[in-house]
Amino acid sequence: MSGRNPMHVVDRLSPYLEGELDRAEHLQVEEHLDRCARCHRELRLLESAGRFLEAPVELSSEREFLRRLDARIDGTGAMNGFPISPSRAEVRDPDPPDERAAPTLRMKLVTPARVAGGLAAAAALTMAAILVDPSGEREAGGPSASEPAGVPERSGIASPPSAIDSRAAQLARHEGIAPVADGPGAASAIESAGAPPAFEFSGRVEAPVRWYVASPAPDAVRRRLLELARSRSGFHVTDQDEWSVTLSLPASMLPSVHEQIVAMANTRAVRGGSGSHGPGGRVLLQIRFDGDLQASPGT
Amino acid sequence: MKATIHSSFSTVAERRTLRAPPPIAREGDEELLRRCRASDRKAFHALVVRHRSGVFALALRMVGRREDAEDLTQETFLRAFHSIADFRGDCPLSSWMYRICRNLCRNHLEWNARRHPLAVMPDELPSRRPGVMELLVTHEQRQEVDEALSRLPEDFREVLILRHTHQMSYEEMAEVLDMPVGTIRSRLHRGRDQLRTVLRPQEGDCP
Image 1 (cartoon, rainbow over the protein chains, first blue to last red):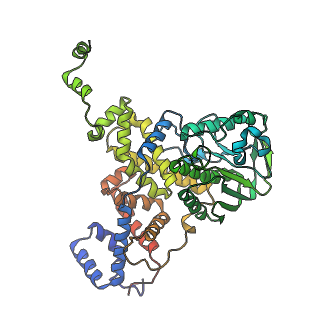
Image 2: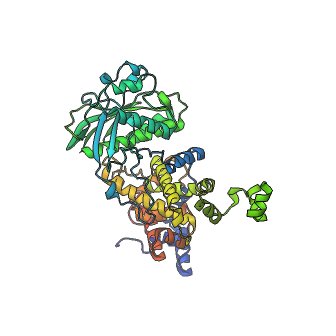
Image 3: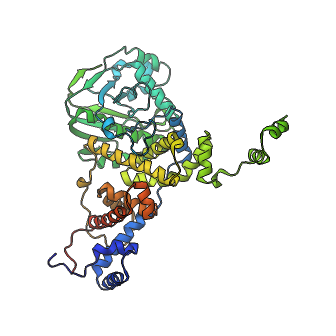
């Protein structure tokens, strides 16, 4: 403490603001504030920060919030990439994170080649789904963290059609929009892909991964996406609609990163959308793997 | 026939209620709770509308991302809905909901820290530019406060949020956070000190 002004009062500013100092101390602090510009600035800084915290927050649409909540209560709604299961509340001690951690990464993809001409309208938006399946219940139709997404460039693995189809329908119900792969022939085209193996990734991912918006998005959505991309270390924004990142992480973490991007993008798109930016009013994100992923057959 | 049924099974007061239910917005939490327990979804909606702002503000300032905060708010009310029969009424309903929300936020932050290596962690945040001396009124400056808040330990962050955003007394905060008032007071002061330190560059000691 040598060299420190003994009259310095910054460590008493909080009790001072709360009115917790006794009269003598209170006066002492006030006198110091009158003649110490730096302490006075510190006080103003705290007051300003407090005012910021007191500012009201901007809420989303009440009707939409209640609609989503009702859908979840009634068992038809899924969370957008959120890891919390909607099980019965443990009010004082919600599910410990450990129980939700370490999901099995199961990657299911539909390649453009496997999706036949019936998907003409949606051919450019071929989708992939990355499913996080911590307990098996999510895939069985429960709320899921995953969203439909893009196209594998090098490692295309067809998915069980029913899973993709039901996910699209589930999302459609939840979001009140048309399924991504709807339209004449869509279901049959997916069915024609046959019953492919599901794959599980293990080890580490060492690959550049690129997300990009596959359909026009409103400026507000783009801005938000860019903010998200820029807020993450390791991401490189290559242009308005595309970001890339070189990942080096346990494979099990890939879907959670992906989920956040996709869920946020699609949530924003749906909220702000009027159907003018992609099928069903969705912004579809495709995910590309420009490197070789170590994959091994799973169940 | 209807009149007969009413006269047989309803009191005058009940009939009046049936004919002209009071505006739901004017009902207190207790009455709405009673109706919720009777599976009245509209009453639950009224509670959600009444408390959403506070729950969302807590979530938003705890986790920092609107999308996550929105999901956490949904989850809070979902859990409240399923547990409403268990609510004992020994504290205000809002405190109970904030407690659910706070626990969910802490779980979420812990989960996020483990599973999202790319997430911006407090230590990775760029250091604040020097020179925030004046009132923090601009958007950019508000963002700096937001960032500073996110760099505080959760123990301090939640106390600051409840004190400033929710204007809670020490006793109310103690109820939500389930800890002694003395601990609340201590965390509030230490939190403010840290917030001030994060917001301001190190400029040496006061002359």
